[in-house]
Length: 246
Ligand SMILES: N#Cc1c(-c2ccc3ccn(Cc4ccncc4)c3c2)n[nH]c1N
Image (cartoon, rainbow, N blue to C red):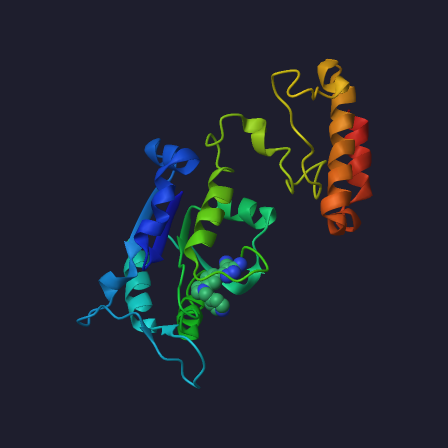
């Protein structure tokens, strides 16, 4: 997978050099290219923003630098990318969308700043390629770089061979399948006792069926406590299927 990121804060994307994504880049599983938008702003001050038409607070990112940047990037690759635009007014970024994007060969992320990008940029490239406006949550940030870090990690960990244990994401919270729409249950490791706190006996039993059922029940309990909205959405048949499987 090729990932391009266009930003006025390239240093904000340094975390893509470490940990899971950094290792995937080093192994050649990910081709990550970070671009400084100001390279396509040609005035003396490399200006990328201006006042909003119609008035109002803040500044808007000018279309010209984005147009030159995206034209050059799209011309540099094979096929067409999905352009992912982080914005507070986007569609929710979900595990389902992460799975969909992980199957794409090329993603271009356009994290903006200020009040966002001139709408004509989204329209221009929406006429040419698949453009997704996406939000990582119902809160307001100052720009799109942190959302890009979140989305890249969520997508990269789904790529074959990136996570050490293939099973690691199969029981994720929100992962499709028997535990779909349930949060993950609690996890434990050694020592067997810590500050007078032990381990649930079932996890020491070696009885895989009982352990799976306990984990399913704990997942249900945690979901009911922290995300009751997911309980309504969950498909009861998925639980039956999971029960039959354990
Ligand atoms: N994804 C995502 C986001 C953002 C986000 C993303 C990109 C930009 C670019 C600029 N801003 C600042 C801004 C713009 C308009 N209205 C308010 C603030 C951004 C915020 N905030 N909250 C989220 N969940």
